[in-house]
Image 1 (cartoon, rainbow over the protein chains, first blue to last red):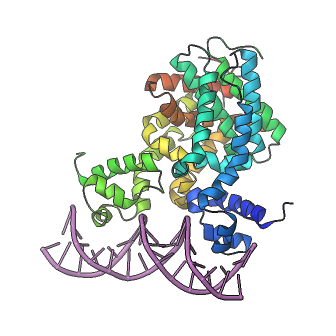
Image 2 (cartoon, rainbow over the protein chains, first blue to last red; image 1 turned 180 degrees about the horizontal axis):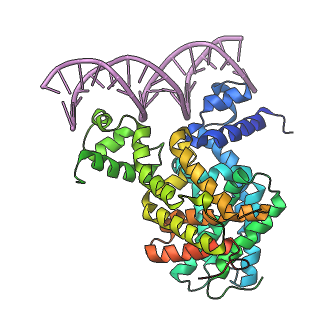
Image 3 (cartoon, rainbow over the protein chains, first blue to last red; image 1 turned 90 degrees about the vertical axis):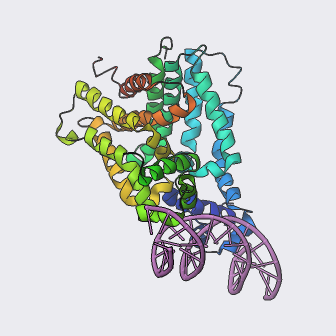
Length: 188
Length: 188
DNA sequence: GTCTATACCTCGATAGAC
DNA sequence: GTCTATCGAGGTATAGAC
């Protein structure tokens, strides 16, 4: 099932992009890593953007799923924990993609359609996490809390021996800690 | 003093890079924004890397300064607060550079000499923040804490009406919270 | 210090044979 | 489904006149 050329291309693309960034990764190099030519790669993916989108899609899908119905969800400390937990799970589940996504957002500026939903999703998360009638501090903390989650990426690079479960629980606690210092959130 | 061509180039480069990313910003576009040609730009900067390095240097200098003598500094909750405070100040002071630096690290992979010291500095900070005999959790939290600081960048985009002072204090508190300052470190 | 002109490369993408 | 060959655009960088 995973032995077709398309999967090989994805795997190779992940490696090359992780090492050189999205812009720095050329289709020629990816094709060579697979053992085919650039032209053959185009048989499987219509464009570079098509390929990159295919790599990001599983992550975006999971993020969208984790945040489904967020806007209708009433804000409460308990709900915050659930939402953040789901979000962290989604990110960790695709942490290999997340690693280079987070470090390459600038380079992905030209891939607007791919990034559009990601920005929309994180934006909604920021807005909801900040709670009702948020102060400027609340809003900064909401962003900072999700930034902690983005720390999965750096973590996997720096402390590479951390198992998913540990990463998961530590990040959730850390993220909640950031929000907790606000005026109202509290419960665990 | 700031009216020479070199300064003009730097300013223009900052704008273009902020808008299009490091790779996406071409020297032609930067030169045109200044009102000179590409060739003239090469008179002032030997290469693109040379120009980018010049833009990053003030930030790196300030980071290096903020972390000077870190390794000899004994770890304590009070010291953590001081170190993080200095580090946050340095980042905020150059937040315009930091915004695109953080979003473009992947694209900067080819600029190894520029990134080398930045990685070395943040690596030392991670190591020191984790404290003596750190557990895996401590190390993850150390990384996450600095990731919060990196959140300055995202913050300035999302909540753009935040003054430096507010940003500074909220990030310091949030960062300390991540480090479990609540449990083993004292407050201010 | 700034210009015009250009060399040289790599990229993404396409055409068409097999 | 994979190949060779090539296109056009755009990049960095250089040479040499002014």
